[in-house]
Image 1 (cartoon, rainbow, N blue to C red):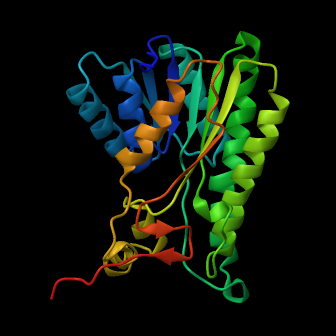
Image 2: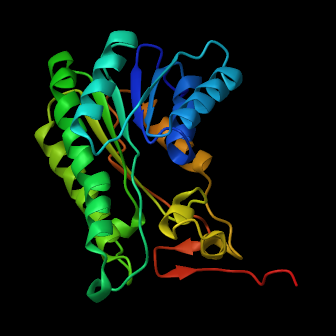
Length: 263
């Protein structure tokens, strides 16, 4: 069955200036959606919008700064998007991060708070703001970018793993609430994806970030984005509720096949 076009959709994407967020926005623009990009880095947002318009002829793109952890920023982003692009029919909750690798006994509680605020609380808050419109129009898609870490927790990452387990549970509970309505809840749990994720986690330490992917073939942001676009372009009666996306070289969080490095 050919992909369904998204010409009538308006997709709000958080964390859209780079990585998976930008890649998803690009795929949805290719499918015809009006894409609304939100992120804190305004210069990167402008660059993302320029690239979208270059790569997708006739792309409809709107950008507005967004700090998902700030209530006023969330409200301003939604208001500007609705005034320019229209009501949200697809929301992609992509903004998220991991900070550090520490045992619970040594946890930095400020970092833990940031992860829980960004990965969980902002998702709940934005969903609370956007869902009433979707329900009233009886149409919508809520896309949650989770992680394999939510179902396979690992040592030295308890706070991050807990945040992604919460995303999975939130998605399942929301799916139950929306049963009988034409609003889908789609959760994607990627494994190792080579983006800025590890660079952020290790505070800009490039060597530590590169070591995460050394000797294996990680996923790319495009790999994940294509899965998201595939799910969104299925007929409305088809819901790919949850998708685990792993590199062929990765078996969950506990085993990664690595080849000897040259030299």
